[in-house]
Structure formats: C-alpha cells, structure tokens
Amino acid sequence: MRRTSLSVLMLLALASAARAQAPEDSTRDLTAIKSDLARTKADLEAVKGQLAQVLRLLSQRAAQGGAAPSGPVRASVANAPSLGRADAPVTLVEFSDFQCPFCGRFFATTLPTLKQDYIDTGKLRYVFRDFPLDQLHPNARMAAEAAHCAGERGKYWEMHDVLFQNQRALAPSQLAEYARAVGVAGPEFEQCVASGRYAPQIERGLTDGAAAGVQGTPGFVIGRTTAADTVEGTPIRGAQPWPSPPWRSKPAKSNASPPSPRAARRSPRV
Image (tube, rainbow, N blue to C red):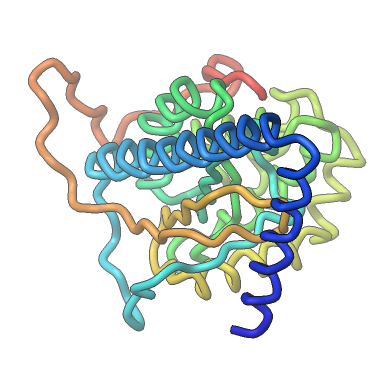
C-alpha cells in the first residue's frame, strides 16, 4: 500500500507539472492514452471471445491431476518462437505437442483464422511453447528438437508446419526428410538434433505449462502484452466440440495417409 501510494503521488506530481507547462497538450495526451487503453481492452476481449468460440471445435483430452488455477496465471515467452508484432496489444501462448491430434486440429482449423484476423493485423502475438506428452507421444520431444534446430537456419515455422502436417509420421528417421523439404538438411542439422541442445528449453515448457495449469494439450494462456518476459492472463483449456455447421465439410477419416511434406501447404511467415 505504501509503495502504491508513493507511485500515485509521483504520477500526480508529474501530471501537475505537465499541466502547468502545457495544459492543452496534456489533455490531448490523456485522451489519447484513454483511447489506447480502451482499444487494447477491446482487442483482448475480442481475441478471447474468438478463441473460446473456435476452441469449441476441438475435443480435448480429459484433464488429469490437480485442479486448474481459477485466477490469472503467468506464462514465460522468453526465447520462444513467436508470430506477429512484438508490441501487439494481446499475447496468446500455446503449450503444444507435435503428435497431439487435437493440437494438429488447432493448427489446421483455428490458427489460420487467428493469423488472418489477428496476427497479421497486428492485434495478436502468438507464442509457441513445447509441451510434449512423452508417455502418449514418444516422438513429440524429438520433433520439437528438430523444429528448434531448423530455427537456427531461420526455418522454425516451416519445420513447425511440416511436422504438424505429418504428425502421424514423426519417427526420428523421417525428420531428416522433413529437414530436406524445408531446406535445412545436412550434418549441422543432424548434429543439432542428436545433441539435445534444446532439451532444457523443452523442459522449461513443461514446467511453465504445468505452473500455468496446463494438464492436456493444447493449453493456452492469453493476456495483455508487456515488455517483460512473462504474460499474465487467463488460462484456456478448450471445450467439448459442438456439431459442425451443415456447410462445413466432414473431417477426414483417422486412417487417412499423411500428406507429403513437399506438397503440404505452409502457412506464411510473419
């Protein structure tokens, strides 16, 4: 309370000094600040509403373990791959698994919509954190390593896309094929994957996700963007699916063959 009071007094003193020097400019500045805050709040609520709606199209694994946090949570974005403007008013952090079919559905059906309507328009920053479920998806962790290793050559998102487009074929021997498809194949890539140099970063994703209440994938945290390396916001764990509208095409059968990485569509880079 004492620190808050001091901060308020300092702000009042600065405001008074500013008014004394340029009352008209101060009034305009205050109006602009209020307008910016209102727009940021509106953007945050719009993205939260849009994401909550499209996540109903996902069926998510039943939660296991303890109860999820009921209040705001924090998620680190330090050194994590991201799309969109760094100063976008809202940040969405996804904790994901390259072999998780529900994560694959989010990638295929939801992320393109968010990208078109929010990421590409500067309203949203999207951050990807690794959350491999080793017992269920034994190849997810190495796939995450491969994506980060491709990122050393500026091809993280290309590799990210190919891995999701071929998530039923992520054996270690197949990662080299995907590396060739995105143009990063070679001894350096293979050595990077074999070295496990990104293992600590992947482990941090698991730790941070668990602290944010992630108990299944995909899990999300959405909040206002700050200059810090963490985002404080609302956890979103998805919802049960609703019936698809009649104009939507039926989903492909589960035994469909994965597309070729060379023929797979890549989402545009930001």
